[in-house]
Image (cartoon, rainbow, N blue to C red; front, side, top):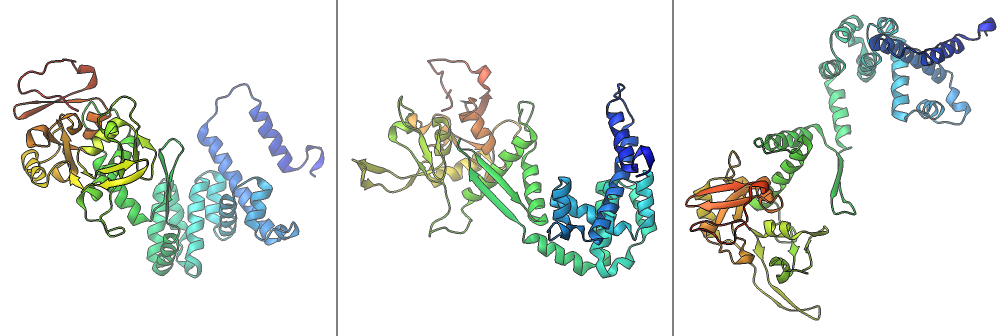
Amino acid sequence: MLGEGGTPLSKLIAAIREFQAREDRSFDNKELRAGIDALEGEFCANARTSQRNREHLVSGNISAASWLARTCGMSVTSAADQLCVGEQLESLPKVAAALASGEIGYQSASVLSHLRDKLGEKRDCFDEEEMLGFAREFSVSGLRRLCTYAWHVADPDGFFNEAEENYTRRRLHISQLPDGMYAIDGLLDPETGASLKTAAETLAKRKGPEDERTHSQRMHDAVGEIVSHALGQGTLPRRHGVKPHINLTTTLEGVKNELGAPPAELELSLPISTRTLERISCDCTMSRVLLADSMVIDVGRATRVVSAPTIRALRVRDKGCRFPGCDRHVDWSSPHHIIHWARGGPGNLPNLVLLCHRHHRLVHEGGWQVIKSGREFRFLPPERVVMRRVRGPGLRWAA
């Protein structure tokens, strides 16, 4: 105790309560942040002292990090970070002073502390004055990147070993939600993550003024394109002796979109809408299975809806997605029936047009129409669709 005023900590807490109860709510964010960062440094130093005194063993905790996390309501990761900073600042007086005075923030001090900790026996390579200068000059992200370079230069073997250890943490979980959507959770290694991000960003560019998708929605659709392209090329390794594909089960009534027809069933998923069924079945291999009293009585030979020669001719004619302004070339496009084959539309060249994954979905699920006039195609959004019972010569409407 320091007399009637109490301990320095109690005085600090009282000052904080007084600050919180003020009427004027405005303050200097930078000044407040500097004060918080200085207190973070004090906390780290005190936590390190407790660790050195083995206070965590008194309460039966194996590690100081778990003890600090439980005692202070922190995560174990945050507690371990605080202990590392507290330990390293004991040997970095200039960094500690810069943190206390507000010259650098706590995150910058943490980045420098972790670099020195990772260097281990090579920590003599850590030039405190030079690194402190970088902390004053660079942002936290820039400093972290610079420290990564410095670590590799000073200890390439240690850098490699941690990279290999991180690689073992890679994971990817794909699980289906009750509503049929899929949730993805994972951790990608730097190479895979960068490759996926680069590929998706390339395909996720906004497609004209009518494209109102958010960036995250465009990234989702880009991944869908990548997967559809990989399956469509037929170059993936075989699974159970056949090329990987998606199985879709429906009834004849469902294909015709008759009233009361059950929805189609997608393999490893929940039932899908009739419009989605039409889009998928535009270009597919179809097998006939006849049932009687739930027993299979006949299985027909698998046939393609669009023949291989017709597909080759279509690829030569269209050379890619025909939607105005689309840059997807022929390998990233698939046939679309202007009049769906289930409604009597032929599988010949005049009734087909190449569309990419995004624009194929716009036509079926999005309500757009494709109108063919001679050799040209026109795409009308839903609000511009004109309902007519009689089609003029040479005009066709989308399925």
